[in-house]
Image: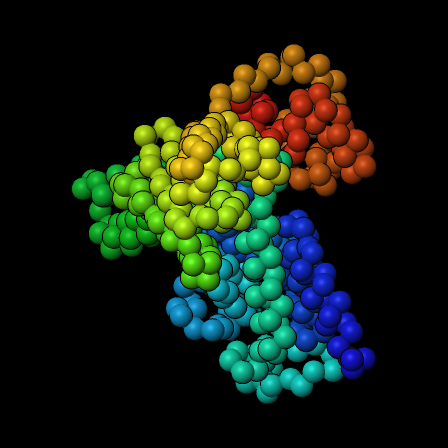
Length: 434
């Protein structure tokens, strides 16, 4: 093996085993020997809790928004790559965008040839060299596609803790966005009413201001709709993705896998429910395929307005074991989402498995803030956390060190029974802390 191949093979190994929380950092590190960048952002709708995965300059990755990434995605328009200038993190940057077969998007901010690589000619001083098309190193595309597939794989096999955190993050994002929409919509609608008043004299000024306000209102509503789309998936779309996931199995196994379509107008599924449902059905189908004498498997989805109803049935001999590890894992996924799974084994006729997944989070009685027994300083830290402040900002406002803030946060999580920062914020808001 050539010595130069060693670092690439190591990078591939690191990406192939990367946890979701480290995928952006590892991809950024892996691509730098071939194409350097100030920041790297992955935008994937597979992760409802964390659609953005970021690495690089903090001033960029801390401010980048879904709306900005959506705008970059629109520039691709079917192309293999796109390079240009676009707002990222509130400021315009040179950007290189790469799509993937999984529909994830990779955005490289301030891309430039790595040291030792041949740089294409620049059109003007200060302009980033054109790296689109054939100039993008093939290895960068390869590493990106590997990372995108790893993300989809990890989400499909997400542990219960990820599903819980994803649901909490999704709910919190919707709540915050809804508050912003309500506040700014009222302001803009009031502005429009005033500017449209016939009592105002300057027609040209009124028309100009009206156009600006109307455009801002449309953009705000669009952002709200886009955020909702990220945490919800139409049931028919979710089912179609399941069919695509199982297509290789139906093609190569020789088993007839039948799909009974859900109603097209059924209620949209929360993102974590859609992902879990696909993973559960895939797991059940694979368990059934491993049995002898199975020729046909039928899977059906339906909605009753409150639950996603899943049925998977085979025509085997009814020997599927309820104690099998694969079935136990699926049962655990169902339990995490407060669902139910029943299995009816009919000797000589096959297995019939029914799964019910609630579309709304289970009601959770949260204690009053007083019941958490927080100290005065802990309560101050929690209030700052609930206001959306980062650790560094909290430390500055309360005249503490960041290590002390982290110490207080650990105690807060323990007292609240929270498993993540997002869940602690959600609990604080539910108890009236803002």
